[in-house]
Length: 332
Image 1 (cartoon, helix red, strand yellow):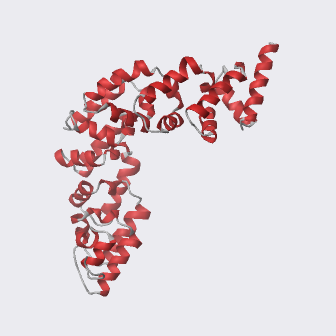
Image 2 (cartoon, rainbow, N blue to C red):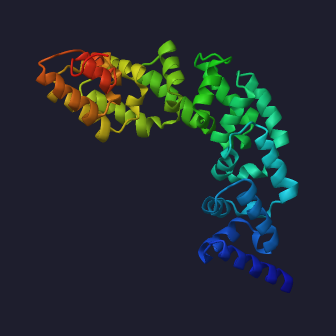
Image 3 (cartoon, helix red, strand yellow):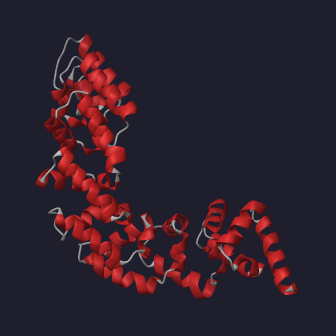
């Protein structure tokens, strides 16, 4: 008991020296029951390896240990070094392994050898290369904790049910939006897809194109995010068919802030520019342009010139090309 008390006191003192306050140390001890019994020299070995070899900066290392104190109980030679070496074989760029550990410290507890080979084989069926898998894991290291059958296969089957080809297309979705694999098919992905079909009216190739171009829309809560935007567009005078065209052309219209983006742009379009809402339907990217630096500025220039053009002619170019197009500067 005396030895255990000395070890606990030694570890507590060591944690204080590393910048942890008493309240944080208390929370860490509750999260990791074995922590009070850990010798400070063992914890110091883990700390030094992650700091000096993996190159996790001290401030972020404190965050990792606070979030997951169990990290300090790992064997450097038996667990940490083999795991980090395995991650490094994935052709990770300098600093990416450190970032992956910061994002998801439990990645250090998983058996890389047992996990990576099945993962690689599964993703290869989706035309995802080893290099792309490495990128996926570095962006979303939590993937290593998911079950292939219980998680990945369900997600792939869901995309197939929407008519998206398994070979090539699904792989592109996953590499574009790695975090989508973390969402429940039944609780999030399918209800959101159903909203896009039944409420917005997207079907077939239109729905597939929206998901391919912006897969992240499926991770949004239909009732909390998409429905309020849909209802705003209706209240602003857009018909259901027009909203469907807007979403098909610019899916972000369903997740943009109503107060900061949609409302001021619709108001500017109708009241200041004197244009019909249908013009935004013809050019849905209208909602992507900055209000002051793009819309107000260019509208002011065209108004002074007594010139009128379509929204796409006005906006679908950078400032220099706009100036050249309307004679503000000489064409090169």
